[in-house]
Length: 175
Image (cartoon, rainbow, N blue to C red; front, top):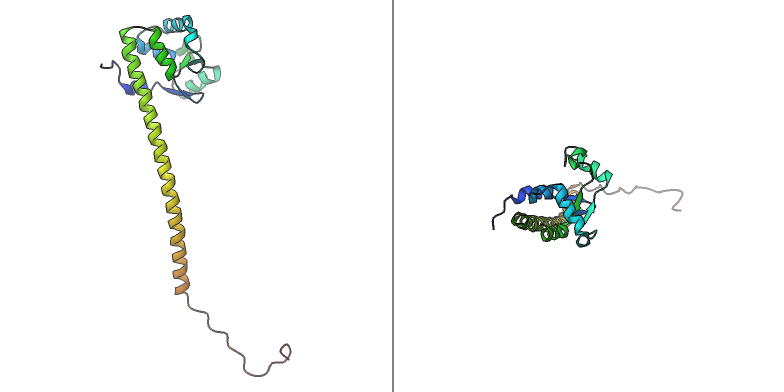
């Protein structure tokens, strides 16, 4: 089944809010081809399907942060009320209440985008682990190389001349 919208477009609309990857209601409504008001009404009629880990309404400071990060042009973009943020599970639940061909196609594309993001994050964690291992090896090698250079410098240094013994008798301490 071909998606109407490229995954890259969807990926750009997935944000990190409250340490969760979410999509905003106005972007979802646009993707699904419905008005934001229609999407919100459908969600409210089926509120029992959307616990807090599926959907939450963003607060004032989160809205200001979205504006300051140029995610949205200005507060008027929200239309008067703060948008809802849907987690991956919330987006999946939306497809059950917006039962249209467009909703099904878009939902499949969104699920693929979330999966792709998880794969990227997983790959980044593996890379970070391997990089840390490499840094530890290099650090160990650096210390070993420093020890080798120190030993070479000691070998290259001219030996101190042996202390000459004084000839003759000494008075004082040795008596």
